[in-house]
Length: 220
Picture 1 (cartoon, one colour):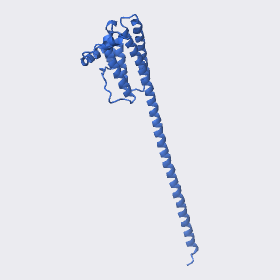
Picture 2 (tube, rainbow, N blue to C red; picture 1 turned 60 degrees about the vertical axis):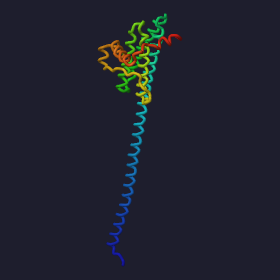
Picture 3 (tube, helix red, strand yellow; picture 1 turned 135 degrees about the horizontal axis):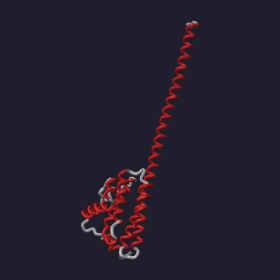
Picture 4 (cartoon, rainbow, N blue to C red; picture 1 turned 90 degrees about the vertical axis):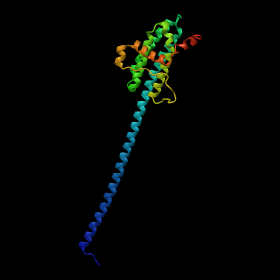
């Protein structure tokens, strides 16, 4: 049956509507694909930036801990040489070198602690108080603190490793310092801080009396 003009126009109009709807549907689908791809790329970029930031912070923390630890090692070595040189002509020179290394450690410990944890900062400062106290011990008595200083140093090694995520859970810490606040340390002083911690160490090591000194002096 032949279609009249009105019916043909209606069908033609419906065809154009259906075609336009199909085009719009495809366009909408394309926009959705583009949008979700954009969101996905943003998420990937954000994750990459977050990972890069974490890596940067970790690298800076590692650098800071290494600087502090190297300075600490130098300080400890000078202290150790001083304990071994007691009674010899070189003792006064080693004592001065120990004091200079102690000042250097204090400087590095304050300069490089921005990204480090509050716990590590407190422990690093506590180490400075310990060795500042040791610097004031009379030369004739310094040798008996050597075993104590070795255990204190070992504990700082463990703390440093833990700060950068390399802690060895199988490793036992020989001695943990009594911790004071910054204000308490400044008020009571390093000599008192050394006394408190040395007494705690002696309670756990009643036979500890610097026995390493006599053994090591033989070859010094």
